[in-house]
Image (cartoon, rainbow, N blue to C red; front, side, top):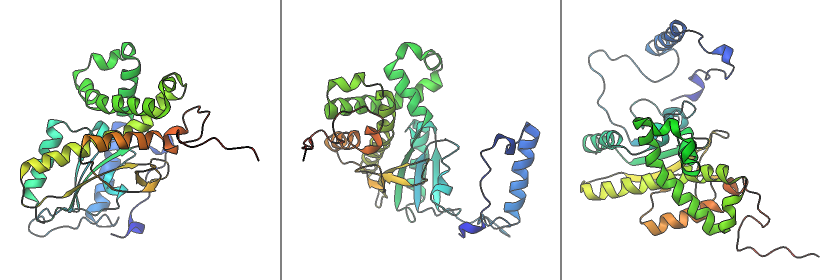
Length: 279
């Protein structure tokens, strides 16, 4: 697909957004007109008799965040990705069922199963707030559906908190930048844990062929897909093989510049580095 043929995304200026439901509907219909006429290079061509058979090469589980549209993130054409999106890219029953459907029906074409988190995730922020200040999370507590999303992420939040404490000592819990660092660290850990769960699911299914499970983080600032070891380089990282690897990842991420930039640390970016000597 020619990326130059795709229309530019809407401006972030609120004035560029539709002001009424009718205007929003009109904008969507106009976009569909362009796509149906193949005028926008979206790759969806009219079919004379029947639609093509689904043959995606990848499954992507990602967040519902409007700033992280999965097909655009990977510049994928139609029929290349089977996309599942839910707040916090959590692995609920419905999401797992959708992934199982793809695994059983598209075995010939599937090669990858990607779990993608993203920086600045609102669902992760809600889970961190609930973990740090449970009494202030009344809105979440009284909504069963919201609580379900947060409960899936809380495990990653707890693991991230333990990783920060293990990497930097118990005093780090009192650091003013702790909430921001905790959210930054939870995003990749949440994606890695979900990828680990999916790896186990695939191993138990006994499929003749199964895609490789990988995970990543989409950086909303740079639009890059990044991963370990430093959350700075382009990466689709293999899913962890066991809990020990998850613990090691947590420590890696806790010491990464992406996380430590939020902390008021008196030492260097790594706890085991010697202090510089005066010349």
